[in-house]
Length: 78
Image 1 (spheres, rainbow, N blue to C red):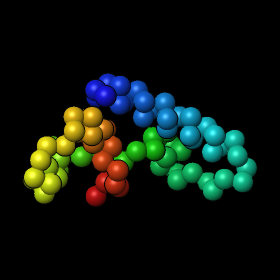
Image 2 (image 1 turned 90 degrees about the vertical axis):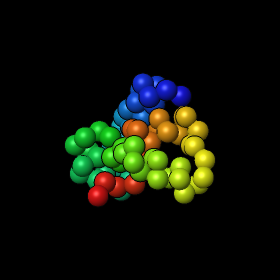
Image 3 (image 1 turned 135 degrees about the vertical axis):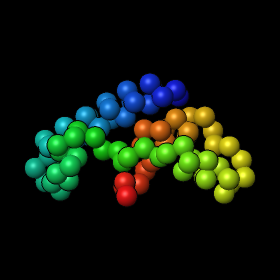
Image 4 (image 1 turned 180 degrees about the horizontal axis):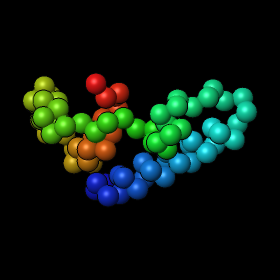
């Protein structure tokens, strides 16, 4: 999936998930930053972080995973 499609998918997923959580009175409250930003993801990985991961693995990451990491690295920002 290219970068634009990842962005579209992740924005839609965030919106749908947040909307569903807000509609569920038994759900744990949203993190204030998630509620404010409307984004469930974390900060993107830097090119250096992606390159370091590839070096640790000894091979390039699949293109789709690289593009995903450009939008959200799956870990909180530092």
